[in-house]
Image 1 (cartoon, rainbow, N blue to C red):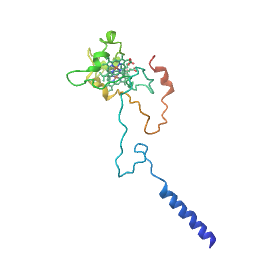
Image 2: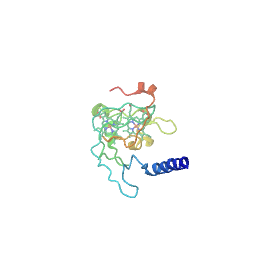
Image 3: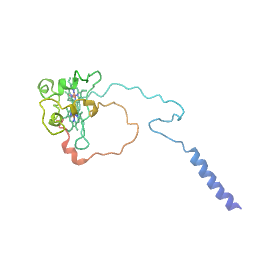
Image 4: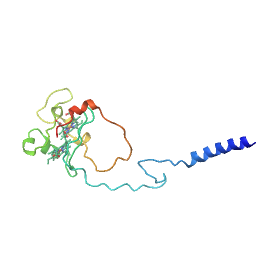
Length: 150
Ligand code: HEC
Ligand code: HEC
């Protein structure tokens, strides 16, 4: 009898534990699922001009400066004001690579390819916030060699 009671105890305890273990979503924090979270306010984008190492070949480099307010639409592309190859002598920006001048059939164009016109499709500025969820991705060490020279 005692043994049965003890076994029941273990089972009950297990159930209680399973129920008590709180569901924790790192992105929501402790806010219950039926309540709205108050996300942290966004502050200014990283603007330290330190080019970051790439983690794998063909990673679009992240943007080490603020881009809020930079117009990119069919009439004007603020990014190209500095990054177009013919502008970089003056702007001191890193010229977009040759790949940005190649169209989908492999033809080299005298102007930026429409495939690469909307820069923010691939390049993103950074927010100075701690990551919401852990990430063990380490990148490909072989690509460290391809990191930009600072
Ligand atoms: C006023 C000139 C200027 C404008 C406008 C500008 N950039 Fe830059 N950008 C730079 C300079 C200079 C650097 C070199 C690092 C630094 O000083 O911030 C740079 C660095 C970068 C890099 C890093 C490249 C690498 O290899 O690490 C990327 C990507 C980039 N910019 C994308 C953009 C995009 C996308 C836009 C438009 C939304 C933009 N930039 C607008 C001047 C500019
Ligand atoms: C379809 C995705 C895509 C778009 C759109 C795009 N890029 Fe890139 N960009 C990349 C990738 C991938 C790389 C790295 C490999 C390479 O050079 O092609 C890169 C590299 C760069 C570099 C670094 C060049 C170097 O030599 O280190 C700069 C600067 C840059 N892009 C700026 C821009 C600007 C400005 C625009 C908009 C006019 C733009 N990119 C549009 C994907 C893109």
